[in-house]
Image (cartoon, rainbow, N blue to C red; front, side, top):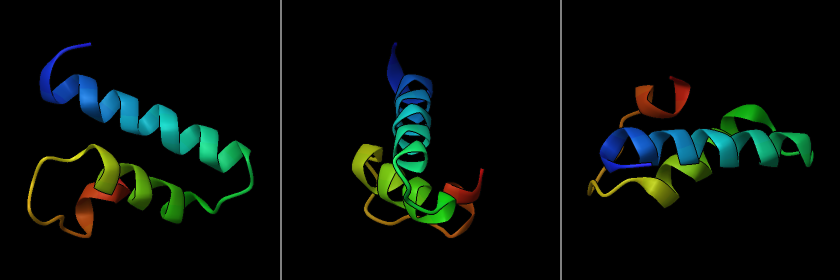
Length: 49
């Protein structure tokens, strides 16, 4: 895993694990994006990808 693409893949894997654990899909994706981003802000579109 390297760079930005690797972080997004890791975030997606975390989100899928959280979803399997019972968290709603959008909440899981949003949490994963916040944990794995290095940006100061995140748009609403980013977790939805």
